[in-house]
Length: 546
Image 1 (cartoon, one colour):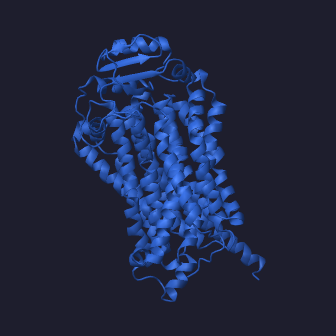
Image 2 (image 1 turned 90 degrees about the vertical axis):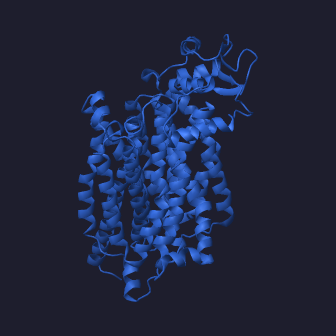
Image 3 (image 1 turned 180 degrees about the vertical axis):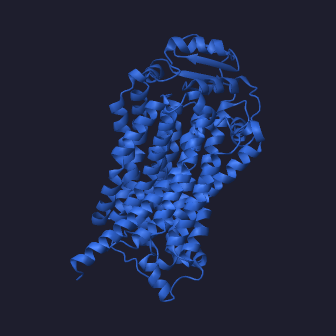
């Protein structure tokens, strides 16, 4: 039995491990998410002028690019972590992340260097994604390998708070900077300051992490010569372990990824871009819900030590499947009641010859929409394109329907007289009497209801995310743990979750239905629940030594 002094020293060591790992990861998530937080503001700065919708989608696409390379970062840094050690690997990742973020803050725009601006932005975003791909697995593994038996869920749940706290920190810094200057100054150059703050955070992170020692599990393996010589081969070329990787991806991290990004980032975009809630109220409402919801990561992490990881994570996915639609409809009613009233009383329908059933547009129209995300925008030519662009830009939800006999394109607003063809003035004259607002009225926002609904989304996030670090650590043997757990985590989060804002926003913009984008996370979460229910093991009692 350890003495009281030895127990106190061990407790101090554990607190340092959790604090240093979590704080550094908070800063790294801040670096990664500051891009997403500011994408609405600088989307016009780095991309060709002429199409605001295409520029916004391009910024979301680049947000997703950072996620797309995360699995490759997991492979590169996971291998290094299993060969060299946990501590030094995630020290390198934070250096890469910090410098890449700061460089975004000094990158010239499209007007100055032309297409080099988006090209360099892509490269910096990829560097961020690579770094984050190596960071999470290292931090989660490092903390879990220090945790006493029966407390891994509790210890690693602190790591799970870091993504939300990093997101909150990015919102807070942007909020403070915006309030310190005029809107014009922020749009012109002030948005760069939050990126440059990364240098300060980097210095603090490196200083603290240099105080850490290597993970005891890895140190013991290294001393005994039991570390893996080929972690990539052992992780993915050996079917028994590769099968576990696939189970964890499709049965856990895939669903966790879409629930996480729906509850935080898509909720932010829905309030600001879809409901047209002003940025002050949007940031305040999101920030309050983040503060209320963050302790639930710890609650569900500790609860998973008692009842298991699997039931909590699967319950979070299932709740999301059945409640996302009513929750987001409730956000519309509470955040922009004038819009909700207009949608109910005077539905807008765009009748077009390009309609091909069930609200779909022709493949050529969808292909043109996809082309605009990655290529310079061309001028909209057809009346359908012009009408959709006008309605989306105005923030007016609509449905697509078959053409009427009057003209190839006809707009109907409730029972009012139809508008043939496209003319912005005629469309505005039809929409205004129906009560469709151009922005949410701040005085009519039911803040308590919005915060409540956002907090419910956060609780779902905590359910799927709080236990998952311990779950993944416990699935894989120590000699290949960093590599094995990092890949499914970053595919689930980086690909299925990271592209969610782009996919969901694209579905909304190209169908006109503000709730249509939710079918993507609902479908993925439902599939993950079914797979997880059938194939995932419970891991809370697994030993994690080598």
